[in-house]
Image (cartoon, rainbow, N blue to C red):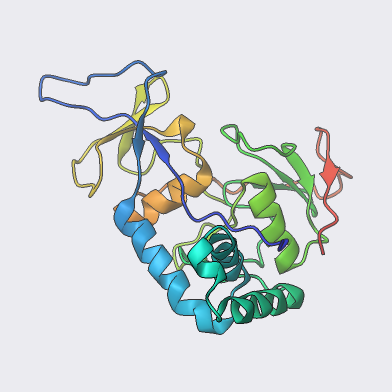
Length: 243
């Protein structure tokens, strides 16, 4: 089976405020699921359009679906699809991301903070499976892609309003207020989506999707002078060897 993994669907934990008599906070343990349907449908269509361009993530998923489908196995085109998928995987290219064009020139994942010249530390809200401090300076674009998938730590989108340091995903979005318990409430009622979210349970990838689908923006972290003479941050480090 192919070694390239692509995650294109996120289920976002969501708590809504209903009624006009004030803020109604549901039990934090009772979470509602929100799927940004329009955005994901558009993303899937975008991936399908790229089928002729040799995208490893698309073909990996397509081959898995065909192998699970008895009707697909008798299709004479299946062997051609598998052959093309294997060819794409061997080329080791970074698959096109349907959400945005990633800025692979940045040392750290989105929301992470650079420490010294080579290290990255995760934000407080990071809940992925990897250590919170990483030495990533040796990673190529493909290595960063693999790290992003394995560690649930996506790279920032390349946009004109990109932050100099990183986004502060531990804070409430711009124009939102802290409602306590990890909740943030919109102050202007201008969002295209829900006015109340429990953002502390939404991963950064999910927050990136909310930015694309709802126009919600997180503030930039302030620029701080860094001690480049320090050999490493005062936390345990894990060095990744992805190339």
